[in-house]
Image (cartoon, rainbow, N blue to C red; front, side, top):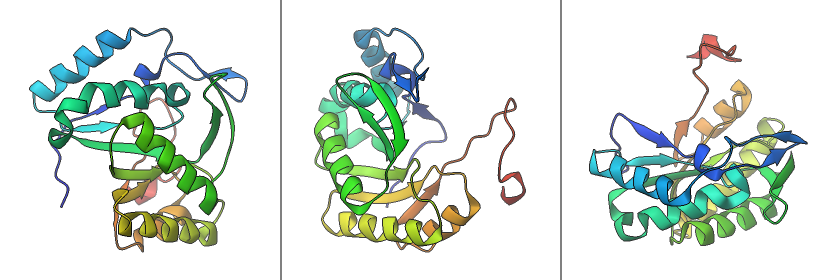
Length: 191
């Protein structure tokens, strides 16, 4: 029941500077007002899908996106991700966590930052180490669907094993993988 246009907007860059595992992970300094204007312009030109992650800017990208779409929430589809650990105060991240407790905490935190009562597509960024762990994550995501906190879910993990486990989930609608001529795709044969 979710429909989006052919073009979506990625929101990694609007998160601003942050570090992950001791290395810069953001796109440098950003102007939040300019980011909001860009999002409004995108909506005005038919963009309906906005993809972010809780870790982008250690929560900052979600906050900016939430502010930008607050008055237009019914016009957009928000996709965000979970599974990478971070500290908002220090704007640093390290490690992964896809335990049931962490998935629930991450969902609640994303809902608050986005200023919404539901996430349209909630995706695993990382943290499920194998098919068994992925199925456990799917179980939590199904519960979040039943509770109305998320509408659908998917994965941005590029492991074929994780992708297959997610595909078994009744509300799984997405598998997000890099398609970049500058990197090798781990599952190119599956595309």
